[in-house]
Amino acid sequence: MISYRVGHGSGYSLAVAEQLKGPASYFPSIEKKYGMPIAHWMSLLDAMPPVRHSEMVAMLKSDHGLGHGHANTLVAQFRANRKL
Image (cartoon, rainbow, N blue to C red; front, side, top):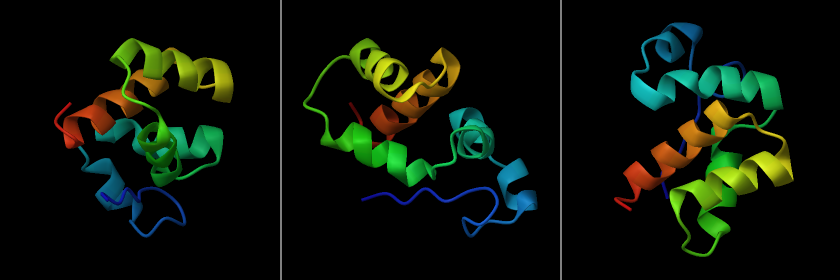
């Protein structure tokens, strides 16, 4: 399993978090806003049955209150890492 740890209290310094590129650059703000590490969100997505990108985004929005941009970022990163 891939480990995601960024932001305050997650093992990476702010300087490292600021160097993240692409969708991962949103990870510190996602952790701060929703109070959960990225690994938590990836675990939720990993537990889902195989569904389309848009259905994964909809689940994060409806069941967990994430905004569209943050949900889309998490799903995009999840699917890219698993080559889906």
